Length: 48
Image (cartoon, rainbow, N blue to C red; front, side, top):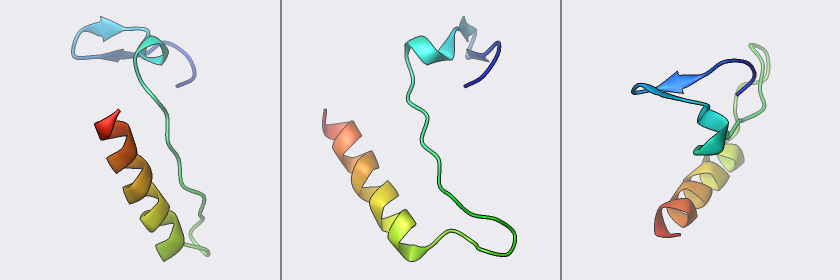
């Protein structure tokens, strides 16, 4: 996250969070492969 951030009263989100982003535009939406990779990554992070 760029700039000042807060979540549930806690500041400095970069100290305790991970940013995940998919690549796409209005003309090129997110792909099935991106969603599959996101699901896999999320599962792995939850198990860590």
